Figure 1 (cartoon, each protein chain N blue to C red):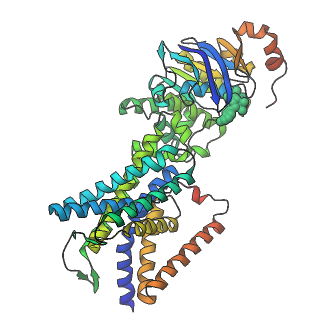
Figure 2 (cartoon, chains in turn purple, blue):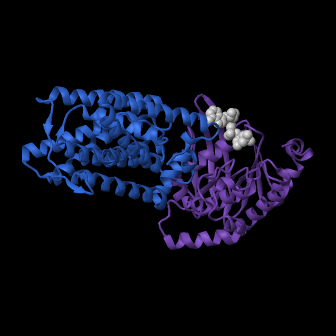
Figure 3 (cartoon, rainbow over the protein chains, first blue to last red):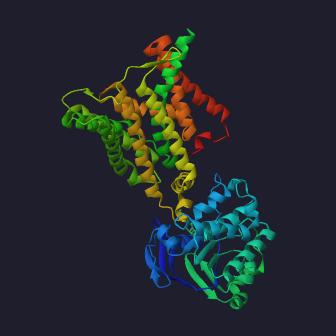
Length: 238
Length: 294
Ligand SMILES: Nc1ncnc2c1ncn2[C@@H]1O[C@H](COP(=O)(O)OP(=O)(O)OP(=O)(O)O)[C@@H](O)[C@H]1O
Ligand SMILES: [Mg+2]
């Protein structure tokens, strides 16, 4: 579904991605692990068109999207649930969802999807007219996911959706990730909570200092010593 | 005395409605882009001179002149946007402001040096004598300005709060980066807001100049100044605030002029502005009222 080849992305002179190659299989949940500052968010931004790679290519189903503007990437079927959720705090829940469907023109379809989101996230329905800034962290994360889904993506990029959330809420987020995937959305997930990710993801990558240093199945992850040490041996204190 | 007060207040509201419209244009640019366009008034002035040109050269009537003025202001606004704002989007707000000041000087000099005369006639929109309601004199063209200001405010509010474009505008104003994540073309939104502001300013300026029936190169400074003061009085960046600020400025000026004369009138306005800024700094400590956008 998604092919990333030799991508180099830099902030000024500093290369945050030093030639990243990986691929995300259609219909699967692929998880990207990595320590702070490894370049995970930079990769998400490079795919979403927020940052322009200096080199390399990114293709979605054999269609090249390297260096495209974010609106073209969204149109191609990619949506991003950004790190730290980034809902619009001064807008209502409903307005946030509408903003997620900005590039769509089918009013009826948008209304139907809005109802679908409210079914999937009943808590958002209860808070439909409330300002997003007044929601709890977990509810904001649901909103951020629902907002991304409003563009009807084929590929959903999720950047640390569990960050800073209580264990129960994290479980709920992961349950939703599984459900979305079962309904046909391909998911590329950045996660530091390897224990949770192991329960849902089909394939793993480990990124360190701007490079992919490991690729494998959940079984291989549990075997791999690097990951054992960093992610599974002792739970990350967050 | 009571009659004077009433007449001054009505006059002030009429003039203030033009200020309110000027402030709305400023607010649109400031609210969305956090940018101050000092060339706002001079762009309107260029539009008005173009209006005068088609009036004098081709004998066009008031409606065509009005249209040319508004379109001219939009064209001049486009020039300012490309030169001062497009090249430094999302950063260096001060650089944009300084650049727009340079363009202000450029446009003003252009008008002063190129034109053989200082002031030119501008056709009146409504050439009827004032009428009286309950002893208060009212000019029809001023009433039109008031009506246009109310219509502009409502239209702008609906556009911002009830339309797809408005949602994108607010998203961009609040959080450019996140708006981009959702596929909103923030640069395009910014350009459209800028041109819309120029059109609004052009409309306001045209109504003022048509009421005065003359245009001078000083109009640019006048319009930037009044719009800026009205926006600051209204609390920077909110639509109702811009309207209240404009009306307040108009009423205070009218009373000041009547009771103290033109010099003290301006002093009174500065005192009021000072008071507003100090009060806001006091009351608003912790409440980011200046951060409120549209
Ligand atoms: N805007 C920026 N300007 C300069 N350097 C940046 C910028 N954003 C990130 N970096 C640098 O790029 C590298 C990768 O950052 P990135 O945010 O992609 O890491 P990450 O893997 O997402 O980390 P985290 O787990 O903390 O979210 C880091 O060294 C970081 O300091
Ligand atoms: Mg990150």
